[in-house]
Length: 256
Image (cartoon, rainbow, N blue to C red; front, top):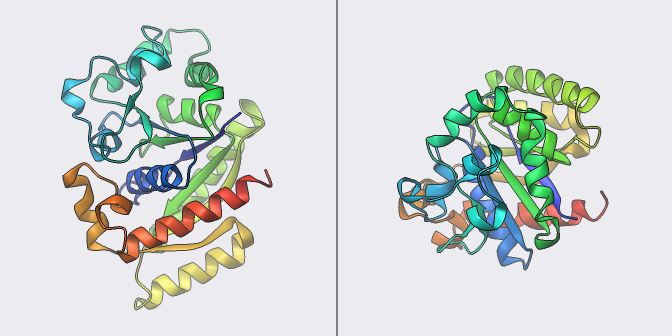
């Protein structure tokens, strides 16, 4: 049975896709059988995995509406090594089509169950909204990894996300919990970021991952080459932070 984690935050631009792609690549390098699920119609995780989203024959869209199975839709990232269920603009149409389907919020969960023996970790990159697609991700997962910047508005959005996770836990997925908060794009020279980081540690304790991802230009450059930062420049500070994060996550997963 794999560990299934959503990488979610309803605030945009907080590094969800960067975290999903780099974590998947780092886990793969650590010998973990890893599947990345791109659940965002923008398809950024797909492109960051070295796959042209415009040339897909099958995608996560086809799985959700019952037109394909995991074996037909998954592809191996040519640059990062892990498997991915890719996405493109077709996925935006799934929002409308899912409304009329039975068990609409658990379609992804049922799909992933068919490949449960194939992986150690499944990471779901969610869109920056609490949509029916994100709900499918939350209903499929054992836990949520929340990447966030140490800024005031991020704290406001975090409170809303935590409430949403509690509602899904109470009504749809009793296994769901917050695995941890990952501080990303962190600049220790900014006093406000240090203050918010301290508040997170005081409020959430050991739910805050020890690994901290700094602002790093190599991580920003990597997607334009269809690669994860941990493969594009393994020696960079950003890549080293994601390697440390992957190691920490594997250790935590042993206690779940």
